[in-house]
Length: 249
Ligand SMILES: Nc1nc2c(ncn2[C@@H]2O[C@H](COP(=O)(O)OP(=O)(O)OP(=O)(O)O)[C@@H](O)[C@H]2O)c(=O)[nH]1
Ligand SMILES: [Mg+2]
Image (cartoon, rainbow, N blue to C red):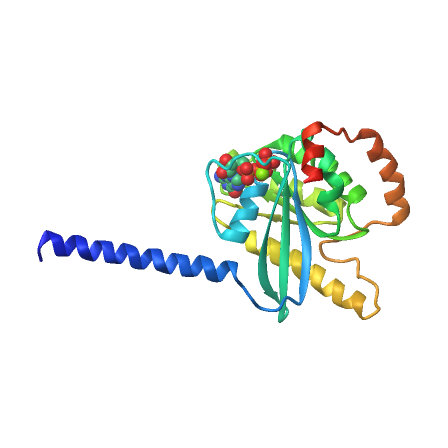
């Protein structure tokens, strides 16, 4: 084989691979099936715990070592099959930094489920969970499916939050607990699948006129509790100029 023929085959192979990737991306982004249900999910937690990484692992099966910090919020979606229904998961991922807290109303509007994330190698992010759960109760719908996530479990050697402690915290707050790694993809699909299944089943029960069962990752928040907490939120949520701009657009 001449060098010319060899390079020719290499170029053809590259072109073929590029074409296959383009078709794959096109098919993934153009799922034209009829959607039975569409649910909004939020991912919340401190900055750098891996919220955006979890989102992009789930929606695009990608991981970026140097993921830029989120400004305001980002949304994405993925269509999945659950209980023979076609479900569109709209995933909203916000910045963990305090300066963006002014976007809260639009971020939480119509939310049906949440992943509350901390980093198992960062104790501070675990300590701050109560702040995120409080915010979720204040701003979210009265019935939410919530899952507590300890992310970065590929970094076992650097663990600062024992699994048992996280499980006890979850139990106290009536949440299910799961550990994930956006890097290795461990449990990422399962986390979304569990929350979406809980939302779907509850929605079907409620549409049939039943009460939403307060089980699984479901968290029930009564309206009097919400009103009480709304007053508190009005007092402690700082608004900043850039956050307001995000809300306008
Ligand atoms: N080893 C490891 N690194 C991770 C994992 N998830 C995220 N990271 C890294 O942690 C850093 C922060 O991840 P992000 O996804 O940007 O975190 P975030 O919570 O969205 O941060 P903000 O947008 O600032 O709120 C990035 O460098 C990621 O590559 C994981 O599961 N394992
Ligand atoms: Mg982010």
